[in-house]
Amino acid sequence: MWNTLFAIVFYTAGGLAIITALIWYGRSLYDVITGRGEIVIAEFDIVGAPGDKDKTSGMALAHMLQARLREIGNDLDAGQEQLTQTVAKESKVNAFQPGVVPPLWNEKKVGLETGLFEPANINVSVAGVAVGGVIEWIQRALVTTRTLKFTIYHKKGVAQVSGSLKPLSIVPDALRLEIKADSVDLDLIVDSLALEIIRRRLSQDSSNFIQTLDLDEFRSLVDTVKSAASYNRSVALGRPMVEQYKDLLGKVKPLANKVPKWYQLNYLAAGIAESAESSPEAAEFYTRVAKALDGDPKQTKLLESVRARANTLTGIDFGATEERIRADAQYAVVYFNKLLNLDLKMPPMRPVPRDLKNSFWDGTTYNFSPEIQSIPDITYHEISFPFLSAICSQYNEGTWERSQSESAAILYAYSDILAMMAKQHRLDQTAESASWLFAEGAVAWVLGLDPTRDLRPLRSFKTPGTAYNDPTLGKDPQVAHMRDFVREEIHFQRNYYVNSGIFNKAFYEAAIRVGTEQAGKIWIAALRDVQDAKALDAKKFADLLESAAGQDKDKIRDALAVVGIQTGATLLGQNPAPSASPSPTPAATASVSANR
Image (cartoon, rainbow, N blue to C red):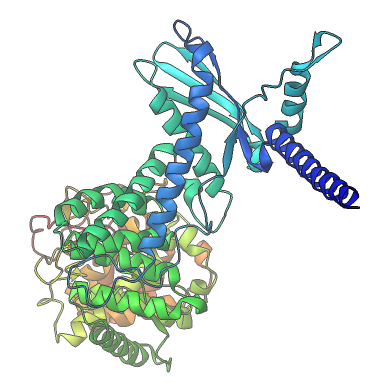
């Protein structure tokens, strides 16, 4: 009986051991053949390499690529995790604290799980015939759909890498890199290939802007994320890192400038700038972030935080600034209502980011830069558009701005003229005492300088074309006479802006003769009589002005003649009549049309 029991136990235990061994063997064989479901990196094919490198380096390159992919992935994963964690409040060291800022990309894990294709070394023979190669063939067949295979072609000074990223489900899957090097540099080849694979993989997510970066820019981004995280850890330990952050700012700034809508990257750049003790640049980046987040209901809290930080860095109280600009707008509304016998309400107002050097009327809202608080002329100019639309339907058609015609220049000049009238009225100036300079300080604003110290104007009514002459912005492009009327499209300026100088000058000449208030009445009466802006030209406009001038008809004729316009005919190229104004003063220096 005991013998029987022992036999049962022995065979049961032996059978279980054999079954376990078979299962282990089967799974091991499957793992060897299929690579356990990982992305498999095959040995590289190398063509044109000197000596026997093409025979010996293929598998080495595969090993190097696997290691580099893991290294880059780990660096980015660790860097992003560190940069999106709030630094402890008790830390007294200036370190970048992104806190609630979303990651640069949505991939939770950037690194790839990869294996190497290593043929199974199984020696099997049937009837004396070696059939081990069949196992390798089966192995390759089973993993081919998830195998990354690359070919490197060497020629003098260049290594070309080609392959397919289809196993990673990347579209488009074709990959071709050209790497310039004086000699065969395997490290550079592997580094470039690994970065390009990860760049292409992350670019599949449309929520980030990595697809806009080329390989070198992405390499710079990887270094930035890795370094920023490392520097933050050093700062947390009390080590001074300002100089390192300054170097890093030089690396991240071109990336952030290239993609201003990528608010996560610009927030990172802002933090780096703060740590580099560059408050103005940090404020610029924060302003970009605010612009990108404006209107997103999910980012209200972050938007408020970013705006507050920008305010702190610039030292500008945007609440008080907005009130000053609103007061300028309110003054313009009251003045224009009285001047034009209207009853329009105060239009909506909305601040624009600091780096947008523009203030404009978009048809319903006055969009203003907080930095124009000391330049009320720009506000008067923009607020004039709804009033001009109320007395002349031609402004509502929306086509006059796209025209290169005389009518576009005439209609645009009215916004300058009304603004100049509002300015002189508020300052209690006469035609003789006024400077006739428009938007003094606007040049400095556009250049990022202090508009309260640098008062170079945007336009000159008295001498159009002399308002500024700046190395960065160029020369004031406005013309002052019909012989110089520009009819072809010119560089970045809209023609109506350039040509409106003629009609600004005409108004100045009229005001010198009859006074600003009387000249304004004549110009407004003429505008009310405009029925068809498309048919309006300098000749018809002159006739309208003469008809509205009454007893001042001769003086208006003289004023128009100064800029080459006569009633009954438009004279192009005539010499201007002697001006009633003094000789022009030397040109001031400064900016481009920053407003509409």
